[in-house]
Image (cartoon, rainbow, N blue to C red; front, side, top):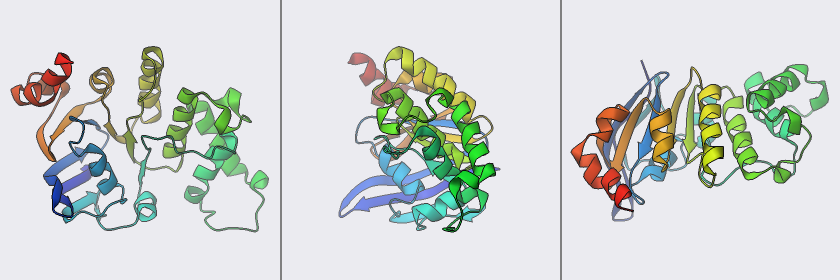
Length: 249
């Protein structure tokens, strides 16, 4: 069964075509990396899937639900969550408080103003669980703004998965990290997304080939290849359009 499917997706901004008829099917539990040159339309594609933009035409399906045109919060409640290129956390809340905010809706608390958060044992336990999974349990009471950059990125991934979504979108999760931080982060992503469906936009080819089951190569708003890492690596169109040019730099 496909966890996510895009059918003939187009996106225009005025007269400018950014996405030009993309078809993409992601099987449940797959890890898919989306790569391509700058300006290829990768971030626009993520914005379409997550509801930030509506497609000009085409359909987007999350399992059996059609989601194109829905608001981001509606798509999130159907089981899809995303991170952003720029770290998106609550800087003046602690690590634990950030994660507790993330789990409340999935536990059914919704807009409840008559409960004290400290008394919500299930929310507190679940926040603790995710804090341990992202290895920030020793920073429990540290304000998010005082974490290192890599720790903030880890917290954002924790927030992304804490709501219980089965489809996770990560937008350049290792951007700005050192090589050693990146290697640790790949392992963290593998662990916390185990059993879930993952789409990631990433420029670091080491991350892409170390993480993805499949790679979708987007060039000028079109998918020119969608296959296993080895098949994509040896694809002449990909070498010419992306990997070759990357090596030349």
